[in-house]
Amino acid sequence: MKFQRSESVDVLILAEGTYPFIRGGVSSWVHQLISGLPEITFGVVFLGSRREDYGDILYVLPKNLVHLEDHYLFEADLDVFASKKDMSESARQKIESLHRWFKKSDEELPETLRSLSFYLEETTFSHFMHGKKAWEYIRKIYLANASDIPFVDYFWTLRNMHKPIWILAEIAASMPKSKIFHAPSTGYAGFLASLASYHYGHPMLLTEHGIYTRERKIDLLSADWIAYHKPALMTQNEEFNYVKGMWIRFFEKIANFAYARSEKILSLYPGAKAVQIRFGADESKCEVIPNGVDIDALSALVSQREGIPPVISLIGRVVPIKDIKSFIRAMRIVADSMPEAKGWIAGPTDEDPEYYKECLNMVKALKLEENIEFLGFRNIKEILPLSGLLTLTSISEGMPLVVLEGFAAGLPAVATDVGSCRDLIYGGLDEEDIAIGKAGAVTKIANPAEMAAQYLRILDDEELWRKMQQNALRRVNRYYRQDMFLERYEKLYEELEQKWQA
Image (cartoon, rainbow, N blue to C red):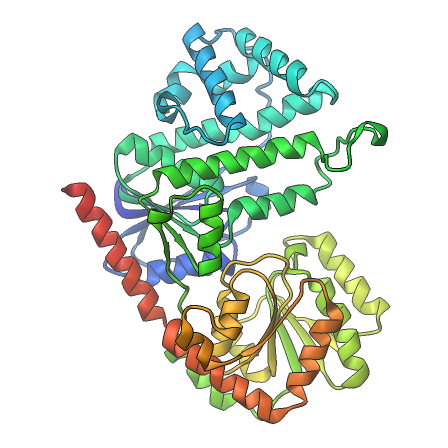
């Protein structure tokens, strides 16, 4: 697919698995940022897994998005033959230093390995994975550290882990001229932004929505695609799959690389900032810029709601990290006490078809066909006026925009205690925020009984519901306005540009 290209942009956003091919979450934030700053020209470099995993563009692209390119890091290839040209002894030594960097937590990536020439000229991916010197080194490291797992598992893990690094180096070499590189996560996007920032000598900005490293740990520790495990008699209680450990260390180290290069390390709420610092970010670089919503566009929905509808809406993707199954179980409890209650699940169902099928089967098994409906992707302005509560049952979140959008539409929320949900619902930015009062309830993760109890408590008490609605409206108007969010980013872009031009 051909996209609009430009030789230069003001801000280049490196988007991993998000905008403009995925809806919601970080994608909504990127679209909001670009659309809200029309005087700034933006470019987007999209990094995906495989082309077949994504469909069409899901947003009307803003006019000031003047450059878009897409790249896929895990496409199948047949380049598995030995390299005819081996790496130099100097390059071999640098590979060893790269390995040491991954093993030690207190070292920075060696300066020579920050250079694109290392990846594109001195040591190509073919040299790294198929040269004789590289093979001997990989074998030595395997025997020293992982000889109790099959070599083929170790080799292909190493290959799949490192191949994207060389792809990212090629992408960085052909980017449009950019005044600022902005990554909405660490991971591969953060690594690309860091490489480009070093190569071109322009500043890098990092905004973490969730903590990427922590989320990858959740994904990896629950993954069943990493198949190898030691026999039970050889495994200590605290030990987990060695291959998963390799992946976790990899993402921890490239996060450290992004933290070290970023001029500013932004988060959406104080709790995330604390985690960033604990994971190695320089506290002097860290700053909180909360999400913001278009309150003027959403406030009109308040008057459209008639009474308190017995409808609990979960707006999000139907994927395991959103824990849709706990919501379904909670609705079984709610329906026993309030048979007329409805549970709406509004979000894409095609990202994990197997999980969606499991959810449908659970609805049927619990005899909730009359109470739960999967709506697919919908405009929130259609759903919020018809809802009595917004819910979020995720096991991991950053700062969910949907909660703020619900507040702006006068809707209390019941959410699990993840990300910034406690701060949003109970107040947490300052004493004044806390004094506003509760705008809903926070529950433990994966606790359907507690969720159901809170749904029923709030829906059954109109006076309580009205008080929570007013608290929600006051909080979102005081702290989470879109214009406040955009002004802070515009000022930050200006400061970075001026600093690096001086």
